[in-house]
Image (cartoon, rainbow, N blue to C red; front, side, top):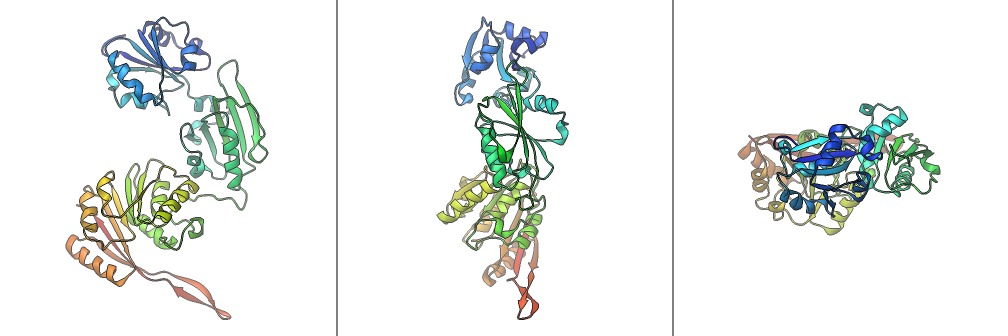
Length: 403
């Protein structure tokens, strides 16, 4: 092993050493210490090196690997270690300049090749160690999805979820142990799923077919109010769409949703991009529990929910890129704490319905600048035999981009 690249990361397929390039095989053979799962270590036999089976969590092995620094170490992984694999975990501790990686075809690549699908046209998600609901935002008519399973029970659970969302005619192809002697590929509709003895190592290909009553999440902001579980404490659809536009979510950013109510703002922020993060802060316990249920229903299970009073809990939160305050804006030091937490170019949006909070918004705009907007929405409703406009309470919105 040349230079400072003492840590080899080698991707293995079900064909074991036979599927490796000569260079990758040399790295395995020359290693003094080999780390991997039990399956990986078995596939790589015979091994003369000292070995370690990954502990749980695998981060517990990093100190042991560190102790071998400078000596030839090999980490065995499934497929492509830097595609939903262990590679990212290793680079949190070890510099890329210390690592040499030889990836094998990923499970996504193998499944796509079996089905004749173009990977760039597929949504690729991992359900391994992640909530099943994470796939929900990808369930769109005509979509092709490749999903890494957690275990042999995952395909049946996924089929049940798809049926519950009104997409029971979707086609599932379960690809088991691809690339090895035990490879098996089976097809079924979600609504008639009856596959038995599914191997723990499997990848699911989904071709989505949606019924007329299917719950399909649109790409634009402003989801229907009745899709959320709420007690009336919700930023209504039209106002929510305008609010999300003002918050201007960008990939990978963090939102604080203060006084979250149903969590609708935080949920739609996260739906804007799968890399986005949000914390919903809600003082009432029953509403905080409701936000968790809503986050699962909309496929953003990693939404963080804090049941506590703002601004007291704000100091414990990860730094935000944007802050929305839908309730409690006039609490002492609330605005100061929010603006202090924001970085340069961070966005603050406050929605005010009461005259008192609207008057406070005028004062904040005078002090800090920003923009004041009044939003008035009316909906047509029956008036006797005729139809008239029923106005909702106007909302004053204060928008600030921190300089």
